[in-house]
Image (cartoon, rainbow, N blue to C red; front, side, top):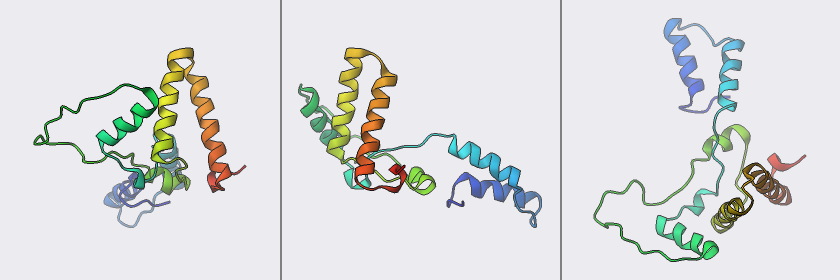
Length: 147
């Protein structure tokens, strides 16, 4: 399954460089697919949920309490004006779509950390969060969440 600019294109380019008439073998592509699907994926809110660091901190404080003082230099070079996870790999390869809004994502993240401080069982906490997320996706009728 070609994904523009992704490693699959590089594999084909490497093969063509050695022999322009050659096609990748089934073994080469299956090895590539194994590496691709056994690599990291980002899952997060939709691009419409992009927020600034200040907005993220303010939303997080709704769930954790506390306060903050922005001491950043407005004239300093910043890495990005808004934060987001690149979820395009999951979208293209897994047909995955996000379920939670920005606010729901931050609430779940705050809950994860708060629960971890209490029970220290990250495997159980993570499994519980995945189960809740999956149920929300199934309720929205997302194809990847259907059994």
